[in-house]
Length: 426
Picture 1 (spheres, helix red, strand yellow):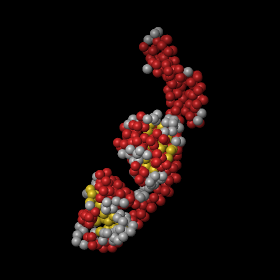
Picture 2 (cartoon, helix red, strand yellow):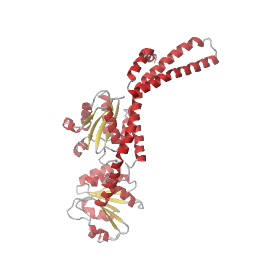
Picture 3 (cartoon, rainbow, N blue to C red):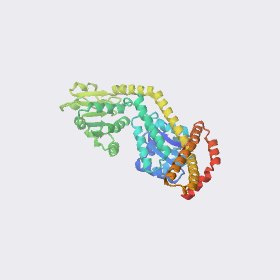
């Protein structure tokens, strides 16, 4: 499979969110696409990664299947005119580029938020789906486990994953810290624009909580509720929901603050209530902390925290790239050696056949102890004889000179004919 790895990619870098939504795959559709790729092409190994920011198909084949994959994506998603969206798909049909891209995506270098904590788990899920469909072979198994090991090195050896580098994730991280003493915090997300929806999704990282979502468009709230399992609050009931919540995250677009001291005028604050204002213009009055028990965090303070984390991550990128380069080089050496594995096996089989034929001539005259000794001695001889050719073959792989040595071994031991003999016996 050396030099046969390729990818078809659509991501936030070249496709708007409306297009990304159209070609996004859940588990069921992903497995259906994997089945269709297997049925309608000669592709031997496949991996599909589908998130809110990208849909990518990685595959192993000597042929370029860009057109086939784009068409099959259209078929599975029910898009009659998928050709209209071809301009959003990138064709990574060069082996090294596709391998490096998968490393960069998995580690978080290609994420909208550099060092995204979620992507590696999404890749692991995609790997499991592909494994379930039996479309992962030795190449992809080794490649993905190399990536997972590389990710561990990045976490342990660099600052690339330290801190929350997006406002939404920084907000959730802070909420998790502030509500540690709460057995099951009641969290209200008020407003489901881009940042409000992002916060709602990131709240999944808080293990034990009760989340309510409230939006002017109840249809959007209901759709997100079905996906995430959160309760929906009708917008006209937002004031009551604010009073009931331990945490309020507001990202509403308003001209004047919607949440003011008056919101709490008839309500006693029995414990701390945390308010997060992620709106521009601000939707929570700045003097609200004059009410005892209310604590306000605005977008500037959270942005500062996220910005510092992002700067630390950006500074760590050279170290991350060095680790990835090292991993790719080691993986490349393995994949080159994998190409000569069949030749090594043929050579071993050819020598074993010679050994078996020769000792068979003497076994009739030998007793049990002599037979055992003869078998042991000849096996040891064969292992020593084959050791040097195998080492030379692997070294030739690293130099890119394996073909000439393979040809010599084929001629010397008639390996192709030996291989056919073994197949016929099976």
